[in-house]
Amino acid sequence: MPEWLQLTRFGLVLLFMLVGLFGLLVPVFPGIVVIWLAALGYGVVSGFSTLGWWLFGAITLLMVIGTTVDNVLVGAGAVQGGASMGSMWAGIAAGVVGTIAFPPVGGLIAAPLVVLLLEYRRHRNWEKAFLALRGMAVGWGLAFVVRFGLGLLMIILWVIWDLNG
Image 1 (cartoon, rainbow, N blue to C red):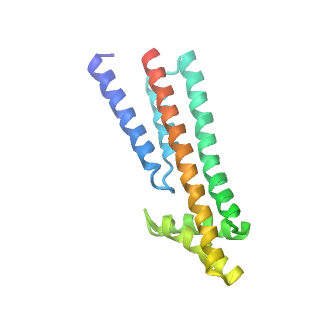
Image 2: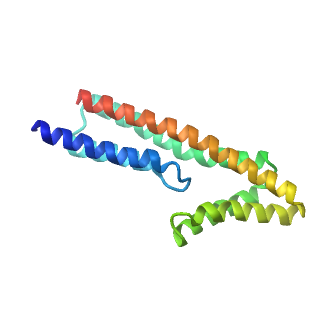
Image 3: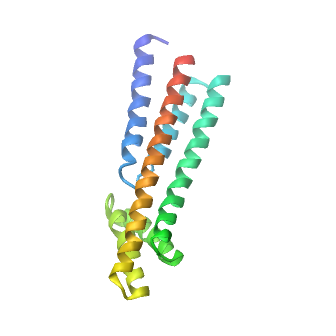
């Protein structure tokens, strides 16, 4: 393959991965999955050597961890802040519906708003409702840090794959 084509391929895959990485700033954007899809596309186009399969397997594992840890940390933060599991599930559902109905920020508004209102209804106390919301925000923050670190690691593994492929 000519060098200019290799550089173009590298640049395009890296661009998609960086879109995924910085897309993690938006809590409902599946940035980890975008990074994984870019690695998958690279493997399909370039081929999977033995090292490529191992690295793609590691990238896949990191993607699964990243998508799981997001929900766990956000939920745990809200519950630690005093939210009920029912409020959390309703908040997640509202986030999904809000994202679909009013992209890209509908879910960002709907999820915390639903948790806040349900917790207020449950306790009849704004202070307790805001504590649950604060816990949810802390969980989102921790989830972002973890997902961003995992995304960086996924990109590093892909660069190693590209350099050795």
